[in-house]
Structures are given as structure tokens and as C-alpha cells.
Length: 486
Ligand SMILES: Cc1cc2nc3c(=O)[nH]c(=O)nc-3n(C[C@H](O)[C@H](O)[C@H](O)COP(=O)(O)OP(=O)(O)OC[C@H]3O[C@@H](n4cnc5c(N)ncnc54)[C@H](O)[C@@H]3O)c2cc1C
Image (cartoon, rainbow, N blue to C red; front, side):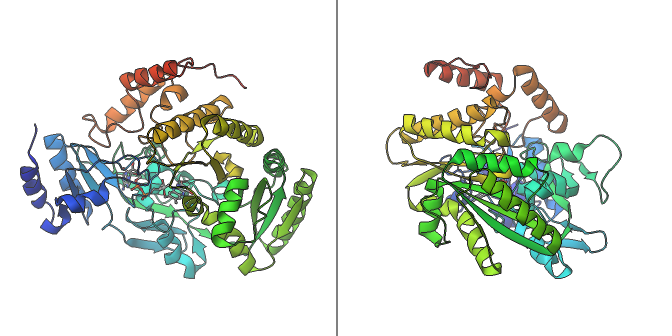
């Protein structure tokens, strides 16, 4: 049944205070995109519940009148996951931002979905605890968005992604149920629906409460910088460190364009003539860390590092990290626009994949800077472009698509941590076959038969894939290229 917007406002006002229903066109524009600002759509309405009962009331109205719902946390997503639907509403969890309970002995916290990622660690710092997944956007992104995207971060190499640090979820479904998945302990009976929900991009339910695992803050953490005159040597070092059984808290890599941009911005003391740089953080007890630093130094030098620098104190450590953390805005200073790609490859392929990215960059005449979670093989090529030049965004998207196909070809995947959203929906046609994608649709319909939750995202239809294949034919390539190693 269709319902006009005025009637819809009245229906929402019966379950929410009037001020929590946004209908003014100028105010709605705030929600027209997420971090992937190349895609924009003003929603019909935005609703801001502050309780689980209000979320359920909103969902009941939408279920009855077949209104699409797009959940939204901090709106920092980079794949267009929170892009509004033209006929739908945005359900913002921004007001549900309280830490509800901290269990010091059990090392858990129960929080609302709109709590910012960093706010969890801040709330438990005095207890010597923290929440390990640390996306670079952690100052602004929410735990609900982290769950929906299965977010990662610098420290996920050692401590796991969001998936590995969530014990339980409370989820509101389109059919009006409030389900508890997982719990307070490591295992729970029944199918593992908790894992299914994490990374489901807001398409199976609205997360209304999260129980997170907390870890003790390590006694010692040191950072060593490896400097290289080839990306191949830097990539080989990453594979060698992990291959030797050392699991650093994080290993991040930057190539020359990223090093130069970051150094120019924050003056972190980076080697601007190097072709690549690694930042490797080791944590644990003082003895463990000192031992591992010695081993990592040896491995870096055996793999061609021209220099390795250990941060001498906390100030220098913060300085080393400052450039990496500011790398995205730093790249934003040297180009009118940039497009962040997110794909994962086996660690051993880092060198050859970066070399192929440089070749593609030449071919498309678009600059690319690479700054990424090297330990996870999680690439973030930043393609520099100018949206004001006609056709430049389309060219950028095509280059992004070629890079993701490259990731698949070497045995990797089209997402590392940013999700599929609208951005990578075409590449899903290559990563998965028709039968696999049909199974995804079938799973989705079990939770949301009317497909009202975040429609059009993450799982392409057969028609969408036919369109994607046609684009490949247009480029003179096979629609489904043989996935053999180049
Ligand atoms: C500068 C920058 C750096 C970044 N670095 C990283 C990084 O290191 N690692 C990383 O993983 N990501 C990174 N990101 C991407 C982004 O921050 C993450 O994907 C984050 O998890 C999104 O959280 P959010 O609260 O902003 O979610 P949003 O962008 O608001 O939403 C993301 C998705 O989650 C859904 N959603 C949100 N809340 C709920 C809910 N309560 N229930 C159900 N569905 C919901 C939305 O519908 C959407 O599909 C970065 C982004 C930026 C801008």
C-alpha cells in the first residue's frame, strides 16, 4: 500500500516525538550521502528514535506501508551503504548513543548502536581496558555501523575484526521481533546467526544493542618504521614477518605518493624519497616486545629495507602514527577529489599487485596513492581525480573496478572492511556466481520477506549483473574473465 509523505509523517509522529521526524528539505540534505559522496539521494524523511520501542514502532509503520528503510550510524561508510532510497526513510541511530553497562570482571560492555567506536574505549580506559577494532574513522563512526560493515582497523591483524570482538546483538526485525543473537559468553547454542548478522550491511535487521568484548591495554607497545626503495621488498617483508610466526598489533604500508602527501601535511619525519614505508607496531609485555623488535629489524634488513627506525619514546611513536592516520585527508589536499578502493589480497602478492596498479594508473592517466593495512593484505588505493572534469568520475570508477578485479584474480576479495554497498555491487557479479548470489537473496528473504531493509545494496540482481557484464563487453573484455593468475 502506498502512503503519501504527509500521512507518513503523521504515522511516525504517533510513535515518535514530532522533533524526531525530519521532513524539512534542507535538513534532509544532511543525510543525502555517506562517505562515498559521489552518490547522493535525498530521503523522503529521516527518523531519530531514542529507544528500542521507537525503533520497533517505526519498523512496524514501514512494514505495513512497504516503505524502504536505510539504517544510519555515523554516515562515515565509504561504499554508499547508508545512501538513502528514493522512496524510503533514513532511520538514524544517532540518539541511541549510551554505554548501558560495563562488566569489568567479564570484560564486556553493553552499548547502544549509536555509540561512537572510540567512545567505548574512552569509557573503559580507567579500568585498563579497551575495544580493539579501531577503524581510522573511530572518532566518528558508530558501533552499529561497525557491526553492519564488519569494520576493521590497524589493530585487527592481531585482535580480529568487529566480528571477533562482538559477543551479542539485540536486533529488531522487519516482522516485529526483537531477537537476541549470541550472548555474554564465547559460544551460544543454535546456528551462529550472530556471525551472519555481522557484515550484513543493514539488510537483515536493525541492530539496537551490542555486547562487545573488551581487552586489557597492553603493558608495552613499540613502533618500528621500515624504509624501502621498492614496493616489492616492502611487501615481501610483510609476508616474511607473519611467516616467521610474529603477529604484530598492526603493519601498515604507504607508497611514495602517500608518504609525500602525509609528510607535507603533518611533518611526521617520513622518508619522502622512499618508494615504500612500513609501520609495524608490536605489543605485549616489555620482554616480548623487545624480543620481537629485534626479530622484525632482522627480517626488514634481510628483505631489503634501506633503513629501520624505532620510535624512541611515546611522542615519536605518536608522530610516526600521525602521518598514517592523516593520510586520507593529506591526499585530499593534493587533489580536488579522491576515491578510496577497498580490496583484499594474499600478503605474498602485495608487491606484484601494487606494480600492476601503477601500470593501470598510467593507462588511465589517473594518479593513485596507496596507504593500507598491509598485514591483512587489505589494500586502500586512493584514486585522485577531479569530479568537475567531464567523464573523470566514470573513468575513476572503471579504474577502481579494474583494481578490484585484480584483487579477485590473485585470490583475494572485493572488500576488506568497507562493505559492498552500492559501490562494489557490480564486482559482486564477478566474485560470486548466479547460484551463490541467489542463495544470498534467499537468506535475506528469511529475515525480511518484503526486502525493505536497505534495498538495492550489496547483493546484485540478475539484471544488474547482466548490465555489468555488458559493460565489460563494451570495454572489449570477457564478461567473466578467466580467474587465472597473471
Ligand atoms: C576517513 C575514513 C577512514 C576510514 N577507515 C576505516 C577503517 O580503517 N576501517 C574500516 O573498516 N572502515 C573505515 N572507514 C569506513 C567506515 O568508517 C566504516 O565502514 C564504519 O563501520 C561505518 O560506521 P558508521 O557508523 O559511520 O555507519 P554508516 O556509514 O552510517 O552505515 C554503514 C552501514 O551500516 C548500516 N547501519 C548503520 N547502523 C546500523 C544499525 N544500527 N543496524 C543495522 N544497520 C546499520 C547502514 O545502513 C549502512 O549500510 C573509514 C571511513 C572514513 C571516512
